Length: 243
Picture (cartoon, rainbow, N blue to C red):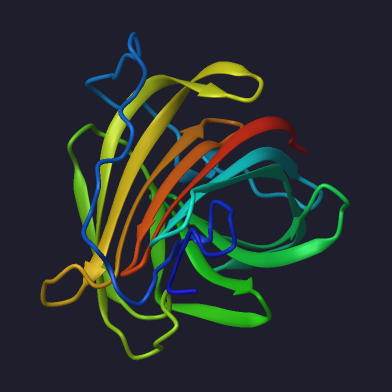
């Protein structure tokens, strides 16, 4: 796998990069009629964006579209379940071990997510038997979500090359209405663009996350570009159990 985006076919794995990119493409725009707010909601914290408690569970539909050079496109669909197995207190927030399961309830990966007052961070992921540790943890959700506000991240751990330094721009897009597998909901959007430090397009990943307060991630779209492959991964929330 290259970048962790899109590597496992899940929201978190949309963050692991490939090893050689063709160049970025545009993420899908919000559907007509989707309204963005001009201000973040008053009060609240990032803990509202991704509620962490043991037993919390999210079920997603997943669609993976892959284009490989000189081959016909392949589209696969399925189900992914995130189950919070353990929650611990860390400095200034909570950290959770999340098991990722397929439609047969068999484990396909792990995520470690940390939530502080101002961000939802991806700390590490287990994919195809390999552990990826992000140094430092990468913000994938931000609070407050003021449209146009940007943050930057620079670090390692989301590539097969542990020494490859990457730069990420995280942009808040405000609240909008978005499709999920259970209907349209209001959610805060965050766009994430990752490139090698120092410039260039090798590798490249662009992702969008939608967070609904009290629910968590309700939709994720990721585009991964490598030298010989384009992959788009889409997850839509089908249902959730929040304790």
